[in-house]
Image (cartoon, rainbow, N blue to C red; front, side, top):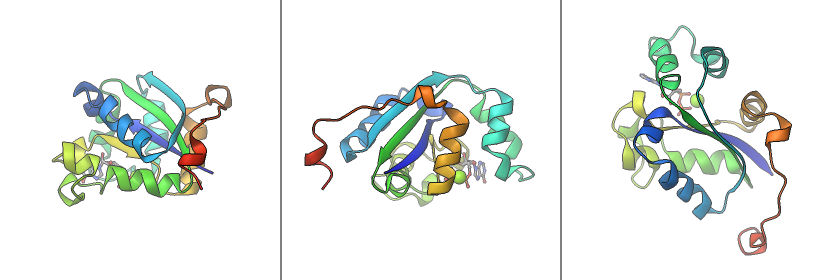
Length: 149
Ligand code: IDP
Ligand code: MG
């Protein structure tokens, strides 16, 4: 079972879209196993986005993610990484497919509402960066046989 890190970025929180976006992930059948509402310090922001260091948008990206609270979550499911990326849509809202979060609520790449891990390996790394093992909840969802074959 894959795990993926999902962030409701500050714009999603400020715009009151946390419930809407979580609802989409729940509706798909993904299972939440961790969540916290938090301010992101610069150190965490810089570690999380280390791959983008040096790019023209890097400074703005760090300012954006640290500007206001985020809702950080871990979601689990078969192919969870690809499934969540698909639900969020392409990085640039203007290129995101209709029906995706970034299409339905966004216009600009610098305010694209969410983060989702892009590979299984990065999912594992990002979950470990953002959550301690104690913060992840092991629970049974009784409807699973009706969602997972
Ligand atoms: P992703 O979030 O879809 O994985 P990445 O390419 O990993 O996209 O970029 C990380 C984040 O950096 C994006 O979600 C977006 O917030 C921001 N970003 C990426 N490219 C640009 C840009 O050209 N201008 C402003 N912000 C950008
Ligand atoms: Mg990325």
